[in-house]
Each structure stands twice: as C-alpha cells, then as structure tokens.
Length: 81
Image (cartoon, rainbow, N blue to C red; front, side, top):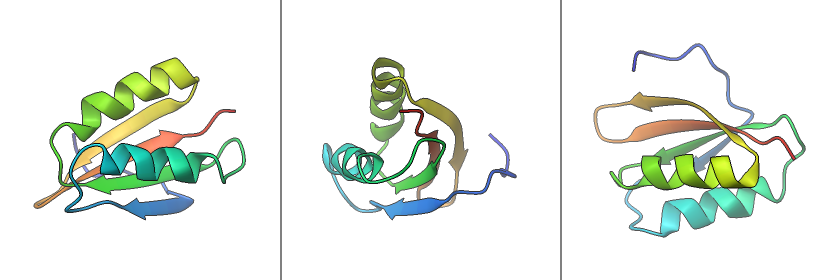
C-alpha cells in the first residue's frame, strides 16, 4: 500500500518483537484507549498483519490500513468498542 494520510492517536512500537509480542502489545493498548482511537502498531514480524486482521474482525475493531516501510509495517487499527 502507499503512504498513508491517516493520523494515529497512539503508536505502539513492537519492531523486533516475535509472535505473539506485537499482538499482545496491541491488545494491551486497545484496552487503555477510548473508542474511536487509531492505534499505529509498528511491527517487523511478517505474521502480524494476518493476526491483527483476524483479531480486529473478531473483536469488532477495524484494521484501517497497512503501510509497508523499509524495515517494518505500520498497521493502523481503529478501536470501536
């Protein structure tokens, strides 16, 4: 995907973490924020995107965009509940 115009309210840096680290960091942060918050999860683990996508669908949140950077991905998740 291309560069995003989306602004994140919170950034969770999980670059260098192995599974399930990035997901656990995201879930932990999601519990602490208000509905409507956009979290940018930064991860260098290639399995993070499918895990986040599945979690978002099951939890009622929304994976808004995934941006591939040189050494990591930025996954933008809107917390809906």
